[in-house]
Length: 105
Figure 1 (cartoon, rainbow, N blue to C red):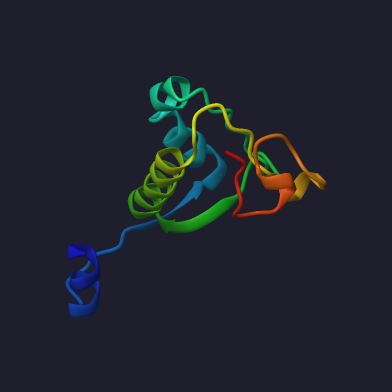
Figure 2 (cartoon, rainbow, N blue to C red; figure 1 turned 45 degrees about the vertical axis):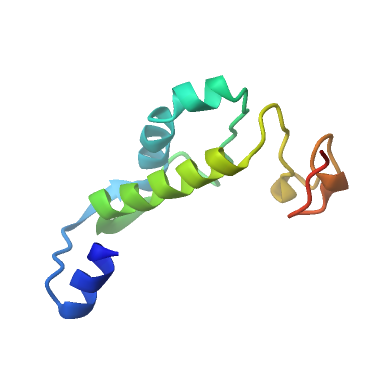
């Protein structure tokens, strides 16, 4: 919230630079390796390429990724397989028959 108020007031400094988003995603995921292991979660990354170059504030983008991953880990039940629409799955065990947003319990 503090960052948002700083952004709105104009006192927020961004430091954009070129970096590989895929590499940053792997770095962010490694921070959660213990939690992923403890919950027995399988994490897969499906990127169109090994390198996706972006020009942004690497620190702020890492904050977003860490927040997103943290929330995902917090809300996924242990030993669950997730539906992957990119893989064209009709359904999978433990995820509501392939319907996003529904989990079998």
